[in-house]
Image (tube, rainbow, N blue to C red; front, side):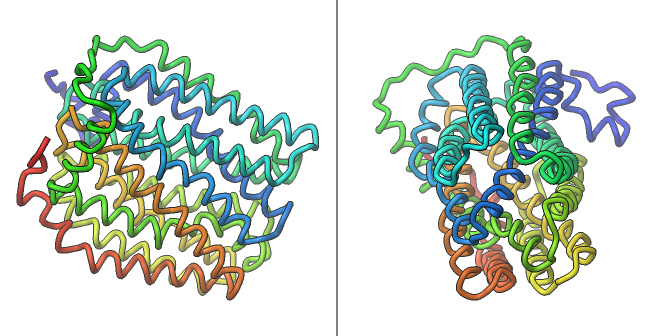
Length: 418
């Protein structure tokens, strides 16, 4: 598609993926749904904090939510490469809506218990283990132009973090006023927007390649591809290490807000909103870049920046200071995750896209159960600030360890095997 004068402006470059009708539909529907998603995330954490007051329980919730990734995601990648990705995403969105509505019915009737929250969190983990890699693999079909793929990925990250600016703050106010159940209900309703957008799309017919091998054979082929592709393996190892050491800070934020900052659900919402502002700035930075080249040099610095932010926020005992620090760590995390996603989708062939993106999701989300349990244990035995500080140190060490391999991702082809 020939670029028009608007497209050649800075704004046009940043938003160039929105030229494509299917991506515009996805962008609008997903934007509404993500606000509800963030509301539910805050409401779930605060509900467990209110019911138990236990950092171990928050860690356990993170564990059961992410554990399905380690089991389901690799097989999901094989099926995504075999099936119609668009239909897979539609069905997973429907199941996620059902989970939110079940949570809402239990909370609004006053019958919700901790075990029910954990079971439904595990169920949502299964859905996400399939939906996230399927949705990521679908981007190339939504834009139709592979040159716009890095921009589409970055804009999707911008959308996720724009919703993070709104959802947590709204959830904090609603929880204080009417309780967690309303947040769950609104999230369930919000899925209608993205489901309607997906059904309105006009995608070119895409026939998945015939299944010549068994599921296990294709699964082994996916692992073999990653093993023999040093660039892909380096990126996935880096993501996994950061997932273990860095991301469990999100599990501890409710207790950090309550016990360290002596705030309420509104304080938690403000912290997440501040983090969303930093992540949004990182995503918009990535959206302005013309290609994936150069991102490999930024990633170790971004994770170091993230780790330093964790160390600083562990020392803060004031809400205003923590609100200033949250954008520091979240922008670093956004640049690392967005860059990894962009590079992988640039260098991986379409026939392997579903399997590699499922392993990318596994590296990130599957590593978090271990990190969540360890962070919850450290917070219970010592303190929440100690757990945050140790996570920051771990993230910095991961950046130092992986920097040489990550910076060499363009030195050899990714598709060394198939």
